[in-house]
Length: 290
Length: 285
Image (tube, rainbow over all chains, first blue to last red):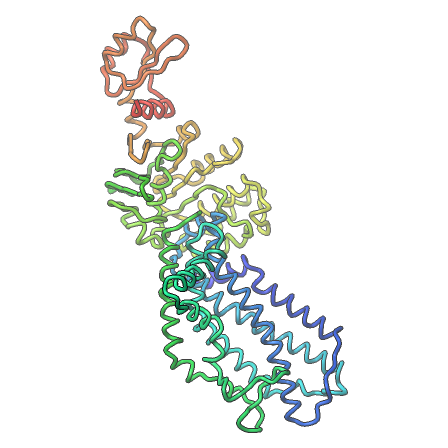
C-alpha cells in the first residue's frame, strides 16, 4: 500500500464520525420508519407508484446529503487545525510523507470519500426503510417502493451529485482548508469573518454587493447549474415531474452534465479552488504547532 | 569526513524577532551532539530549520539535502522526537506501528515489537490512556525501529519523571546508538545529558557561542579554585568567568598556561554545566 492509502486509513482511525454519524442518522430514520405514523394515500396508477418510489428515495438521499454537507464542511475546516492544536503534526511530519500528499488526501476524504460513505448509508437505509414501509403500509403502497428502474436512477443521481458537488464547492473547500492550515484559533470565525468583512467593506465604500452575490451564488447555485431546473419541477411530495410531457420523470432528463461541464462558472470556481489548496499546502509546509 | 549537518549564516526571523542570527554549525557522523542553550536561545528554531519544518535564510544542508525543500526525502534517513507528548491521543499503539511500517521504508516492525515487549504497553491501548512515560516508550520504539542516520531529539524528556528520563537515555545509548548513527539533542537541562554527549554546541540569543568536542573541552578549558590572597595573580591570567563559592573563587580559563595556574591552586576540567554557565554569563558580561 502506498502513503495515500495509509493516510486515508489514518483519517478513518481519527475521525470515526465519518461513518458513525451516517450510521446513527440512518438508524434514527429506520426507527422513524418502524414506529412513526405512516399515512400514505392509496396509489392507483403505475405513474403514481413510480413517483412515490422516486420521492421516497430522493427524500432519504437529500436528508443524508444535507448531513453530509454539514459534516464535510466541519471536517475540512478542522482537518489541518487539530493536529497543529494537539502538536501531533510534529509526529506526522517526522515521517517521509509530503505536505502536498497529506493535504490532498484530506481534501479527497472531505469531497469524495465522505460523500461515498453517506451514499452507501443512504442506500442501506432506503433499502431497509422500503422493506419496513412496504410491510407497514402494504394496503396502500404494496411493492411500489421496490422499483429497480427508479433505484438505478437514484444511484446515477447520487454519483452525479457527488462529482458536481466536489467540483462546484472546490473553492469553498479550498478556503476552509486554507483557514484550517492558517488559523491559530477560532477556525469558524476565520472562515466566516474575512468574506463577511469584504462584503461589508464593498457595501460601505462602493455601495455594491458583488462579493455577496458571488458568495451567495457559490453557496446556493449548484442545482441551477447541474440540473435542468427549468423543464422539470419538484412536486410537493418531493418527486420530479416533467412539465413538458406526461412521461414518467427520468434522471437522464433531470441531470444536465453538458451544461455543468461546459459552464465557465464551474471551471473558474475550480481554478480558484485549486489556487486556494496550493496556498493551504504552502501554509502546511511552513506552520507546525500553534 | 563530510559533515552530516552543515549550517552557514543560518538565520530565522519571526517578524522583527531574530531567533537565529547567522549561526554556523557542523555536526559530523557518529557523534552525539548536545545543542544547549537557555529558553528562547534559538534551539528550537535551529532544529525546526534542520528538520525542514520551517523556511530560513542562509545555507543549510542535512545529509546532503536542503531540509525545507526536501523534507520528505530527508525523513527517510532522519528521525525526530520533538517532545514526547505529540503522539495523537486517538492513536492506538498497533495503529501507530502499522502506520509507520506502512509509510517508512526503513522501519523494522520486529525491532519495534521487541522493544515494546520489554514494556507494559499493549497494542490496543490508545495514547490518551498511556502515561507520559509509556508514551515515551512507544515513541522510542517507533523511532528506534527506523534505521536512520540522524536522530534529532528536541527536549525529549520534558515533563517526565526521573525514572522515565533515566530509562529514556539508557535505551537511547544502549539500544540505539552505534557508530553509523548520529544524535542531535537539544535540552536546557545540561546535567542530564552531559555524560552521554561527545560534542557540545552552546547557543544563546540566536548565536552559536561555542562548538566543541568533549575531548577538546579537557584541553581547552580549565578551572582553578583560588583563595582571596591569590585572586589578583589568577586574574592576571585572564579568566573569562569567576564564581564565588564558600570563600573561594573559581576562575575559568580558556587555553591558559597550565604551569602558572597550577601554582595558584588545583586545576580541574570544568563540567559541561559549569562551562555552560561560565560561557553564557561571561558572554553576557
